Image (spheres, rainbow, N blue to C red):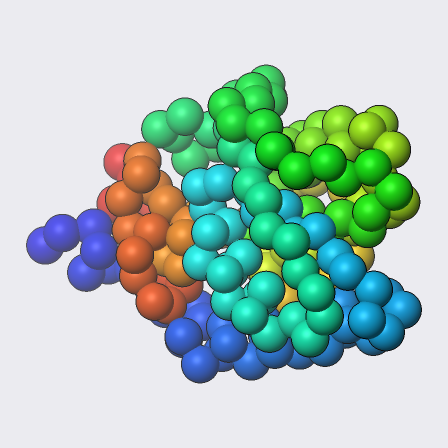
Length: 180
């Protein structure tokens, strides 16, 4: 039996799309009508969520990406954040929405949010599909949230385990047994 066969489905593709639509409506209502927004996706994990979210936002949107890591191939954060790809658009005086698939320790998002805020953005908010509050090591609260989840390792819909399983349409919990 492969590890995938032991995964436990937490959220179906339909569940995820409902969360995305709700979040997009919340985001649209937060900013003044018609005001543009720069949506910065955190690679690699947020690419699916980022694409679906920006398609649902009903205002002018500029898209960019940043790639940061604190995981490598493990299931726990190393605690050190590294920027592997920086944004390319000028965010000075613009509203920025940092789009992340999951908030875990908070280290990566806190680091990126502070870094973007220092560039003179009008505001920097966070949209996260999932939040594991019980894993938080540094303060970091999403401004727009899909749902809170317990402290389980999850894969699918962009979330990976050693660069695998990002392509799954649903989000799954990985039980402890396959991790051994």
